[in-house]
Each structure stands twice: as C-alpha cells, then as structure tokens.
Image 1 (cartoon, rainbow over the protein chains, first blue to last red):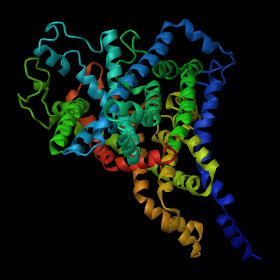
Image 2 (tube, rainbow over the protein chains, first blue to last red; image 1 turned 30 degrees about the vertical axis):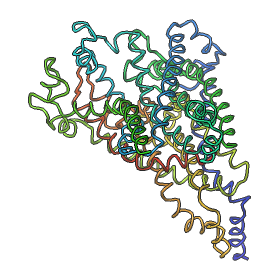
Image 3 (tube, rainbow over the protein chains, first blue to last red; image 1 turned 90 degrees about the vertical axis):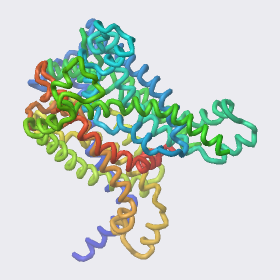
Image 4 (cartoon, rainbow over the protein chains, first blue to last red; image 1 turned 180 degrees about the horizontal axis):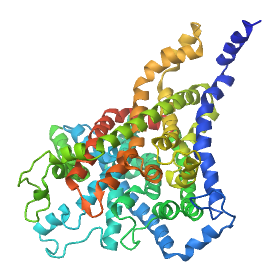
Amino acid sequence: MEAVAPRRRRKLLEERRFLAPLLIAPAIIVIALLVGGPLVLAAYLSLTDATAGSLSGSFVGFDNYVDPWRDPNFRKALQNTIVFTLVANAIVVVVAALLAHFLLRDFRGKWLLRLLVLLPWAAPVALSTIGWLWIFDSLFSVVNWTAKELHLVDRFNPPQWLGDPNLAMASVITVHAWRLIPFATVIMIAGLASIPKEVDDAAAVDGATGLRKLFRVTLPLQLPIATIAVLFGIVFTATDMAVVYILTRGGPFNSTQMLPMWAFQTGIQGGSLGPGAAIALYLLPVLAVVTVLMLLFARRVEVT
Amino acid sequence: MPLRRRRESLLTYLVVGPFAIMLAFPFYWMLWTALKTEQDLYNVESVPFSFSQGSPTFDNVRFLFEDTQYLRWIGNTVLVGAVVVAITLLVSIPAGYALARLSGRWGTSLGVGIFLVYLVPPTLLFLPLSRLVAELGLQDQLASLIVVYPSFTIPFSVWLLMGFFKTIPRELEEAALVDGASRLRTLLRIVFPISLPGILTVVIFAFSLCVGEFIYAVSFITTSTNKTISTGIYTELIRGDVFYWGALMAATLIPSIPLALFYNLFLDRFIAGFTGGAFR
C-alpha cells in the first residue's frame, strides 16, 4: 500500500498537465505578491490620505488625482516627463538605426567600437550619471573648457549646464539618450540580422538598390523590432528617477521636475503616501499604451 | 571589389568612430579625473586633458578604499545581487522551461504576460512596497532589497530562459525520455548542461539589474553601512558642498569596467534569448 503512493506521485510528475503548472506556479506567486499586490495597494493608497506612519488613511475619493492639477510643480513634472521621453527617444532611434546599420557588417576593429558603444548600457545608471555631473560641473566642466579654448563660449560667463532651466533640460535629455542608445542599437542589430539573406537576393534581382531598397525593403522589415526598442526606451525614460535625482534633483526651481521624482519627493521625503501614489499612477496610461503596442508589434515580428 | 570594401570600411569608421568616442567619453573622463591630484583637478589654469602637479596618482583610489565605506558598499551590493540571483534562478529556470516546453499556445501567451510585468516600473511600486517593507520590519536592512528585487529579476529572467530553452533541439530530450529517463532527470542531466551558457547570461544580466537599481535602494535604506554602491557613492561621498571628485570618479568607474566586459562577452547570447522568446 505504502509503495503505491510514491509511484503514483512520480507518475503525476510525468504528466504535462501537472508538471507544467507546478513548475510555473512559484514564478506566478512571486509576481502576484511583489507586483500584483503592491499595484493594487498603490491604487488603494492613491484614494486615501495615508501617510508614512500608518496604512489606514481615510478615504478621500479622487482628490489625490484632482488636487495635483492645481499644483504648477505637478503640471511641470507631467510636461517634462513627456518632453524628456519624446526628445530623448527621437535622438535614440536615429542614432541607433545609424549605428546598427554600420555595426552589422564585419570590419577590422569592430569589437573595440562595439565595446565602446556598449559602455553606457553596461554601467549602472546611478553611477554613470555621477560622471555626467562632473562633466557638467559649474567651474570645471570639461565641455566648457574645450568650448572656451575654441572660443565658442564667453570665457567669463560660460554656460551653466545644470544651473540654467533650459540647459538643465538639455542635460537631462542628453544623459537619457546617451544611456539608451546602446540598448536600442543592440536590439536593432538583432532585427537587421534576422532579415533572411534571400530577401537581399530577391531585392537585388528586382533591381532594388540604395535608397529604394532602404525604404521598400529594409525599413519595413526592421520597423517592428525598431518599435520594440523604442517602446523599451519610452518605459525606461518615463519611469527613471536616477538621472534627474542625481543631476538636478528636479531643479533649478523645479524646471526639470518629472513624475517619478515628484512622486518620490511627495511620498517618501514628504511622507504623503496617498498623494505620492496617485502621482506615480499618472504613469499608468503611458505604460498601458506601450504594452498594447508592444503586443501588437511582437505579433507582427513573429509573422515575418 | 577590394577598393569598394575599403571605401565602405572607411565610411564605417567615419560614422561609428565619432559616436563611439562620444558614448565612451564619460568613462575616459572618469579615469582621467580619478588619477588626478586635488591641486591639478581644481586648478583653472591647468589643461584638463593632461597631467601636472603630482598627477597621475593613486591617492584617490587609496582614499576611497581606506577612508570611506566603499568596500562595504561593494560587499553589500554583491551580497544582495548574489542572493537575489540565486532566488531568481530557483524560480525562473523551472518556469522558463515549462513555458517553453510543457505548455502549448497558452505557454507563450503566459510568457509574454510575465515579460510585460517587467515593464511595470519600480516607480509605481516603491510607495506601496515601502509600506510592505515597514510592516515586515525590514526598513534600513539589506533584506528589504533582497525581498523586493525579485519583482523585476524574475519576469526578466523567465523571459530570457524561455527564449534559451526554445532554441534547444527537442530531439535531445525526447531521446532521453524514450530511453526511460524521467522528465526531471532529463531536465537535470540533459537540458541544464546544454543551457548553461544561457543560464550564465541570466546570471550576468539579473545581477547587473540589481547593481543598477536605484529607486528602491534610495527609498528603503538610509544607514550608510547598509547602502549599496548605486546609492552609497552619491549620498555619502558628496558631503554638503564638498565633492571628492577624484574618489567619486574612481568609485563609479570601478564597478562599470567588469560589467562592461561581461556584457560584451555575453551580448550575443543575450540577444538570442531576448529575441528568441517570441520576437522572431
């Protein structure tokens, strides 16, 4: 009798119907506990006036979503998040497409150039941004030193990269674009490499060359995977806090404020969990749109 | 033909070269700054691209390792990364395998679903999770990061592993199964050894996600001895208006170099796993 039970259990393990859910379950449970639960909790918190001290704030309806609109800092944060994301990713697409086009081929010294191009992606963003903080330093900026030597800027009144609102915006965008280019390049190289050789040959037979081939053959085939790269870029830019936190802390005068930073300052530093959670959740529509697009394009890539 | 080849190569260098230099410049600059003396660094007269007044020197690196908690932060980071990677592998390898092999269409859909969870950013979760961490009494402890980091390493790793397992020829496993080996035995004896490079790739990238994580680390940990490098350097080496630039640049460069070398080494496998799951 006792010998039968283990054998039956072993048999159950052989059965796909039991084995598959058994193996997948731990991952699903962890994700439900660490992502699903907190997401629901965030939604709940955003409807209350909870503070860091206690979870049991009282219900305030949609006040936390409505009130921020009266706050110029929030409106600036929302606007900047959109500007950062769009401008940085526009730069990323163009540069990454160009780099991918050239890095696909074999040439002498390719490994060195590839290593250099990869560096910004491999370095932790919180650390490399400190490097940029030094490059943008008000007194000892190497950019300003070079520009002064070339007589491009006023020797006695050089640009204050992080002190002037417009330049600070440009600095943040530069760092975002800089760190995202390698990843987008890598994804686009993968996309280009997956275009079958026959397509090239067929295009050659049909007499498609140069620009014609680029617009009629290469770009359409590359579009889905390029879109995936961009969608990742959008998520990474819109939700990142490290770059702004380290470069400007949202300053000067909140001119580079953005949603994640504002949510952090409200929720963690200010201790207002409810309003902070609501501010962070303003990112959700962006993510929803990106997710849907990504699913659509993922399917298209699968077809080709 | 050779002439055309050479012209193409020249064009490649002309286009990729400047971009490569721009992308790598901050790291070159970290190195230069790390090797300079204070007098050299803060002298407006000296040329920033050359060394003078006692430079190059290793004083900044010595200061970093002897007079700051840098080693401690590296230790913390490695500890958190290692434990999180271990948990991640334990959960993700079975899930990735099952999604790639044991389940049909719904497996792929579920896989894509799990991957999309990776897109849910820490920005949305750090406030509720800070409450959770407080409820568990883990504030200010490395354990808080160990509990929370699998929230992004697991979705990412399940996806990568699913991609790797799909590239292994089915015939290998089927041959073993026909020979009477159990499925778990096949998994341990046949599938894992072949997927070792893929699993190593997951180790590298999951570990680097932990090293680079910022928002949880800055929200949960405030005691300097419990910090990781991603927050410790910025919050502890900048004291008020005093910037130890030489030490700061050494501190940021040191972890970046090994990560970059590993990325370069495992890049092709990463691409295979990342795009092999569904984008193919």
